[in-house]
Length: 521
Image 1: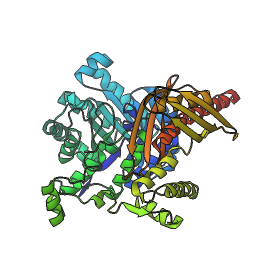
Image 2: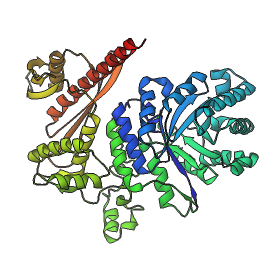
Image 3: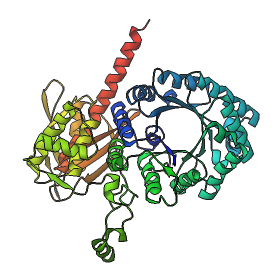
Image 4: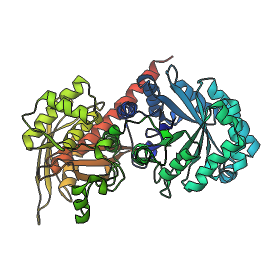
């Protein structure tokens, strides 16, 4: 049986989703959970694009050591050097270089001839080999590249030292039959690929909704690496969804009898939730495998069938993807040990300090509501992990709001600053949330523009926690903030203050970086 390697690019292509952003700690935590999930390769970033991506690649490659850590680079000397520097000292490094090859890209983007692109590919694959033994090459827009040229550039990349050749459907244009044929054709024309153990890889985008189907077709035609993301996040309409690929191969083993992955499917749901919370990209309710409705049955005929035999309307057991069978687990009389046991069942491993903070938040929540659900616990964990590296410059102390028909909405807000000093401000607004945010701006002295505001109930019941997520802009930066409380007005204030604290954290990091630069000779 052949193993299909799972190459996860959530931290690179996934983070390029419009509206998604991850801080350093969040990227590291996702990488740790990807390791536990069993992915074979983690594409940790694109080091040339920012100092943040460079640091993420460097940290992840040295701390998450079982999977291969890949760094992306264009076929440009400065990109490859930066990727090599980020991976320095890593036990399992890979440099992933790419160059556009399709006719439309050659003529309109690169403005180069085929021979020039082949030479560029040879040069930069060889340059990458000076840093690492494990090099991957991608002919960008490979699915729209002429087949003969695709064969030619694949041969050139392998001769220069590439061990993996990825043929991406960069713009989601291919259909399963033609995409699978590309892999078949390349293998037929270059039998030395199989002889030398060169791995062919697929990387599919979802512009036509075919990313998963195309990836599976590639696997059936010889691809032994699939590039994908958690929840299918990514540029434009997204990437191929890791959870859908893995569960399709597992559930339909009759169609993939000789293929397997190394993924522990029971960890799929927890990491889906984690990525959703960290990126701010909520999973649609009807999303396959991990959506809220994926295992829900409302129609009477479906419910009747389920009661008689689960297999009538469920082709997978929700437990197989880590969706807990029992939702209600804890209350205010539950102890630290019971909480930690449930946290581990949900797929999280917390250090003692983080567990202490989660336990304190749990006790506070349990005093406010009778029943604490798995979703509540997950949200508490994710909230603590998300804010772990943020400087808590401001903290909400008290909040009072007056609103109603014929009344000017007024908010009185008290916050504590880093020194513990309390300050209070009253403001009016177009509504209660606007009034709160106006008061917070005055108290903190930081003016941020609200770009997006989302609210959702974390669990069920009238005492459910309300989660508010905001996206805001401060000068040329965008940040997200998150608030969690049984009082949705309080959640709104907490989310806005969280966003401001993130601004302060970013400012502090920039100041420290400037200070380090000033100390250098």
